[in-house]
Amino acid sequence: MTSISTAAAREPVRWGRVALHLGCLAALLVMLYPLAWLLATSLKPADEVIASLDLLPRHLEWSNYETAFEGVNDVSIWRLLSNSLLIAGGAVLGNVISCSLAAYAFARLRFRFRGPMFAFMIATIMLPHHAILIPQYIIFNKLGMVNTYWPLILPKFLATEAFFVFLIVQFMRGLPRELEEAARIDGCGPFRSFFQIVLPLTRPALITTAIFTFIWTWNDFFTQLIYLFDPDKFTLTLALRSFVDASSQSAFGPMFAMSVIALLPIVLFFLAFQRFLVEGMASSGLKG
Amino acid sequence: MTTTAIPTGEKRATAPTTKRPSKRERQGAAWVFLSPWVLGATVLTLLPMAVSLYLSFTDYNLFDPPHWVGLRNYTQMFTEDPRYWRSVTTTLMYVVIAVPLQLALALVVALALKSMKRGKAFYRSAFYAPSLLGASMSIALVWRAVFNDGGTVDNLFGTGGWVNRPGWALLAVALLTVWQFGAPMVIFLAGLQQIPAELYEAAAVDGAGTWRQFLSVTVPMLSPVLFFNLVLQTIQAFQVFTPAFAVSAGKGGPADSTLVYTMYLYDRGFVASHMGYASAMAWVLLLVIGVVTAVLFRTSRSWVFYASEGDR
Image (cartoon, rainbow over all chains, first blue to last red):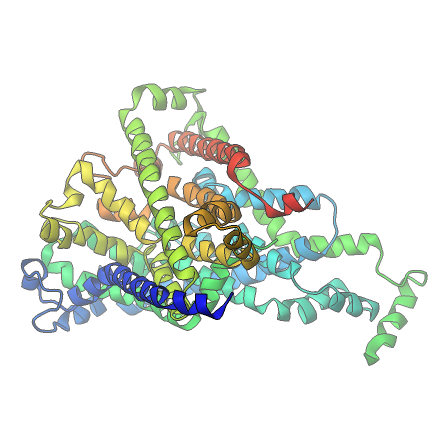
């Protein structure tokens, strides 16, 4: 490349860059609109919600949040929030422990039927949840666990989310084997090797698993809808659903105030861990 | 590494001849690590699959014992249940609208971001955010309001509320999915960045313009990633539930126009207590997803290019 040709190429390229940025910003504005609308509506008084075309409310109606904090069906929002947190926290703990154990076996240990079992594990990533949903429900029903949190948490301790097992396997395969080999020569068994060498190095994959599990469990609706009946045991997501059924215009403000509260943890997680999230997503299917 | 002496000392008492743990011991350790997964895979995946296959040939309401009816559920589904077919066509339409639109948008944005020097990380995260938020009930409710009578879309385009019009409600649901194009975009972007720059340089030397480079370098090199996204998004789209549930207030309306497959399955199984019928529906879904995935894999041979194959 000669300097003449780069100099000649610079001007049009720069204008292309500007157009590119403008295009991206315009797309972002359109995409962020629903979020802005949500925030604005949560602060609008009832008569303005539909009547007014303005995005910004004429005055801020904080009482929507006061109403939202009183909760739904006589259940306080703190209760709903702690229910959601309990389920999401349990799911995170379960997935991180069980998926990393299984992943280590698949990535590093030799055992009979390893190939077919790994193939089966990969296949379950594609398995539609609905094919096993009804018998699972029957099992939990027989165990007397319907309308408790067990059906939402217990499966995570049994590594049923194969996606994360796969994610961690892919990550572990990228770690240098020499470390474990050196440890083995020093007399380190597979357990010490796992806990003291592999697990600490796998931390990025574990964090990705934890964050995704939290957000997906927090957002989950279907499983909670099926297993939980008592308003007392509802999560924020389920409580929002009760708003849907009684969707009168007057409940709009409080409903969207509660929606904002329900979104807040995800937004905070996203802001704090966006690097892990975006890179975890990008690496999930590409390596190996 | 001063601890070397301790384990060998211990070993001598039990297995004096071998330095390493025996093969059986190593197998044993593997099964300890695997045990939660094995338990989950058998009790919560394999067993339920077998049971749901069995239940699909029965009449079962959770309380009375299952009553064998043979192929009754399947024949009823295919020949006597117009709502079943409605849910099938609705889901197919949704898949055909949402998946290509979402992937096209994801690819266009990924291409735009690829060569960007400044702001790439910012845009990448910002476009990805809806993929996480959009799965929530909160955003589904926003969607319902924005596309309702008197909502923003009505005000802007005067088309009336989409969610109340049978021809349009499904489009609103599909757009919520398209809006979440960030996840496939991030995967596209990662794929684009793995294409070696030499390929573009070589193409440029050979006189290939931007368009030619796109067709001859980008498309073939990106085809495995495109295929991955296509399979993933298609499988997920067949199972859509929450957005349809929220946009139609849990009813699949108007006029069953947003009654997607899983919503009808939920309705039959958990609202009407026809667990046998719902199991039959689940098995048809499993088979359809299996067939669609197999077809995608088969056609992929003609258009997906794996660089490593060329090397061998």
